[in-house]
Image (cartoon, rainbow, N blue to C red):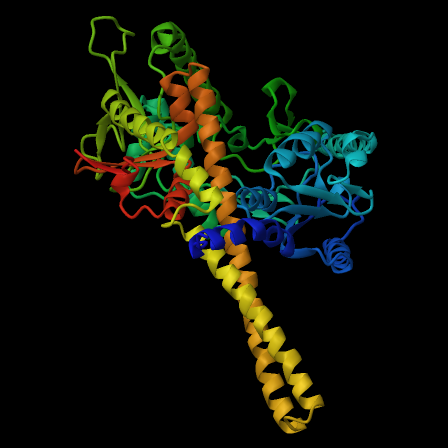
Length: 571
């Protein structure tokens, strides 16, 4: 009779233990809470968190991994920082279940809320629970019932009603001229007590200088260069210094847009202008630009920096320039359409770290015939960093690496099956599964020692002092083994999620290839960024880089050459 090998026995035990391994762990919960800033909201953040914690406490199969809180954000759109963090953690495998107090805390937009609950979460394998609504996506009757769409529709209607009341109040205050200034305009200081603008003696001189130069014939670009050469602080930096309030913009140099903003600003004539932008909360439009004819203008509200004659002359000149620019752009549009920016906002300078700008070079006789495209940090020859790379060359290098990536993914089907079945000897997954079996046996042996120790005490083989000493040691050992089992369980679960993610990546790539997608679609789907240095090195970062690296780690690949995909290419 043939003796069974120890290796086959271990593999059979691993396969038998996998279902048990996956059911012993607790479900990682992400609690999500939200509170908008309007007066109609009654739920506090603390109350929502307390309800979620109590729910998890009452259900021992759950374990809170993190609480995600968006305070001061409307439920009518999903552009919220902690919600984005929640989705990121879900994709990273850190969260398996989302719990909220009720549907309205998750969102009040009927369409977007339904999209996440009926498409995104099921696709990612994430469970969703709404406590007050008694909704649990793990129950088929809840998924297929009418509760979810009806609740979402009610929340959307409520948000629409609140939005109308808020917007009407804002529009009424605009018409009456009682709207409070949220921040000052560059060139003025804000008297918050009286809600009045007063002339800033320092910044107002810069404003007058900009208008004077523009009417003298300097272009907006030339004015920006002169201000930068004189080291004049840009408006956002100056306002941050004066008001001690951090600004959103990170721009530290004057440019065409900053100069145009000053030339277009009617506030410098002494008028208070309200209603330039309109908020539409339920339509997910934070700032809708309003045409000048609909602005609420209140003349002579404060002291003027620029007289109306100067302002009108500058505005007419700027409008003529805008018309000419748009006309030229329309003429060049048919030819320019053939030169689409392939790597939009993806090309980064390896020297200064900035996103490189996209330019086209006209080498033909046609006035609008663009024939060559390139990326550079700055178009000016005397710029401190003027790294340049041509689009055609960059596209060739990137597509070559994409081909290598596709070949690598396609060639890993057998490796993936070996990993799933525990047949890959180099795999760290297999070693962890073996370690888990060993720990389980060790835990069972410790339980036997504790039981035998009690029998020895009952039989009088050991006294009570010896029993307490040995029993305490065995219990500590068991606690340490239990903690290690929990840790290894988590590692195994994450590794199996990595295998699933790699398989999903392969399916996505296959879909792109079957659809006959062009190179642009492959770049959009797979490329995160391309870093180019002045030394000729090109560093490519794939969106799926972490998935590839984790899979290679699982498969036991030691060298980058095993994948055939290189992140850095020296040219």
